[in-house]
Length: 264
Image (cartoon, rainbow, N blue to C red; front, side):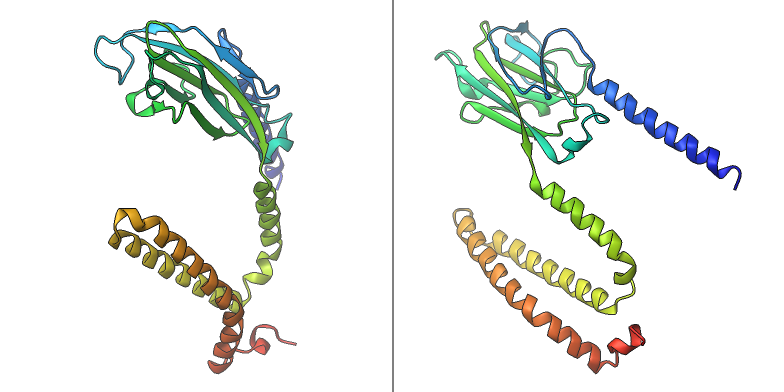
């Protein structure tokens, strides 16, 4: 008992040190273009660094690259932002006939050891219809590399925006409620039977959907998916009303009643 308190204190100190280290890492400042999540702004880029050996480009092709550093929030100071998400958007503002929009690529990573424009070939993503959007954690410190064929760099707009996600708060509340109800649910036979049957029904439905999507032609997959999903919703709403009574009757028939697990 005497050694338990020092161990707990040491564990707390280690956790505080760990979070402080993450916090300091996410707020590292460096030279170059940067955006801060705490101050959502828009950055216009009109110049870049010429790179000749960028991975994934044609041999000998000259690529013009630029890097934007995105500094996340402090985990210790902005804990209330756990339900938020950061949306990063890249948009080509002005382009010339020389550069096609499909040739503009971005690489979203956190590897600070890579030079500008040196992301692996599989990490480069092309812009779709002149824009690119990605959601990430507001606590992350990320690097955004942008490249396009040289010798000039088209005007590119990079913006960040915070979004509040209500479902994260709902999941947190549901998790707390489930933890509070865990002692009683672990002793309920009805909960075990109902959860097992629900998982089985969901797995069967997913298998039927998967096999049906494989058998139909490619052009008709969307209509089939809409039909199947609507059917699943209808059947699911019916089962939600029918299963409780069925479970109760089955448990009574096999000799399991409420008196057996809720004695007076």
